[in-house]
Image 1 (cartoon, rainbow, N blue to C red):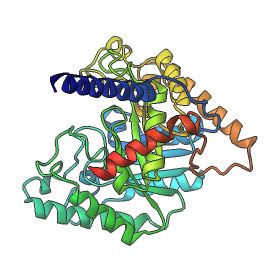
Image 2: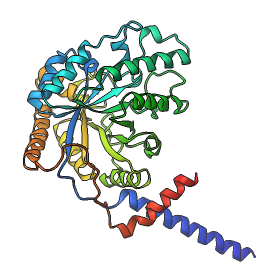
Image 3: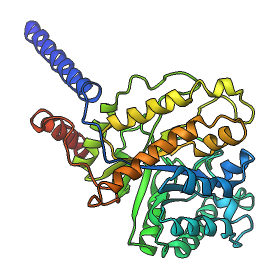
Image 4: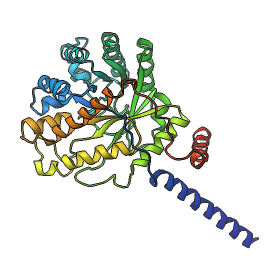
Length: 376
């Protein structure tokens, strides 16, 4: 009996090791065909531009007319728009939307409480002392005002609800990360006000399975980071890792995965205005920028928004180092050239249906993840 038990345990261990090796190989070994038809865009935050003491309108126009970006993810802050309760200041956002419309630029509009850039959750001063219920009620009022104001704009293609709402990061109310109940309320409200546009929910590309976002979103937005504080902390992740995860999301949840935050600025230990330039260049410089672009192309994803356009412009205008800005121009110029030579290819986001590996090799793995998700 003891021998039988030992043999059984050995078999179990071997099976577990084989499954582990197979899963490891699936996520970390191999390659996919590099994307050629890629949609490139940039993230833009007026508050970040002003923190860097830039003329934010000049920067915005430079993005449109010098950089040549045709896709912008627009980060807006609740506390900037509603500095006084029930008194909405939309003038600056109106201008940004109007400029995008005039230039045929497409916008992903980030809306909610946690919308990117420190302190992440942008609660107006008058709302800081409110109860959880009161904060949520006021936030829904704000969201309603925003959607009703801009839902008829031809520039806006998607609403992104919150920014990485499942990643515990930033200064946010204690209730924010307790569950997804309120996030679902936000999404339901926006869908009721504007059923014509799909909803993006963003998630950490490196620290998440993306399953949670996939259950709520129409499209899943992910981050893609390589270096933090000059350290290659995500060096163990290969382009194929992102491709395989996106393949699972597509086949299990039938959702599109795009990168809405591709690292293109430093992750320094101090704010940019305090951090020495030498330290900043350890986690982002022209060489790293080109490497990140090449890495992104190898993931097989077809949509990327650069995170850091304000920093590029700051380096160009204030530090007299325009190299990354100029490298980015090359990316957008190549994008325009491809679009001009591919007039029959729609510019809207299209799901890449090319499997990353032969179907026969990964069909059972997909089935395994489907079973795991629905079973647990």
